[in-house]
Length: 164
Image (cartoon, rainbow, N blue to C red; front, top):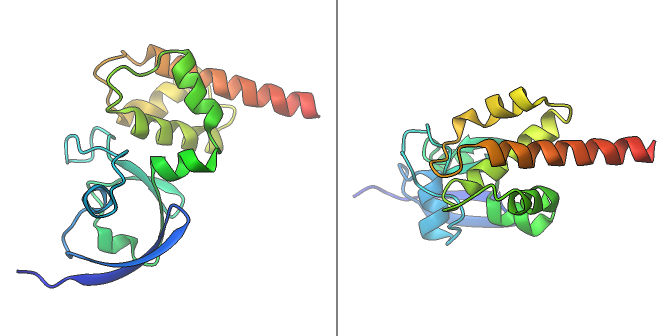
């Protein structure tokens, strides 16, 4: 039996201190200990993107990061980002373009798309496709997902131009 390790992090804006098993993955900690089930376990090898969360401002695969690696860090899940309202337009575009079916990949896709929009606001359609290529979707064929992301990019750009 392994000894637990105490960690402290800011999780979705709340500072928490808790004990974790040293080898517990971040996504398992979030789902099982914190009851934040928006991130999913898929391949458990970092390939599918279903477990995507933000750690210290960057998206990571929660199945490849140990919870102890988030000690003293900031973790944001789909639940926290949804509550912030910062990408409500992206969520609405996913609805408008029917960009999800079963929903298993949706949280990872939204987090990847939000990071893309933040880092590359002038991304081309091909850049969008490349950016989300690490997130698997077995239902939609990606077209609707790309359409939704491109729509938000165009809308945000139009807002900037309009404000100028």
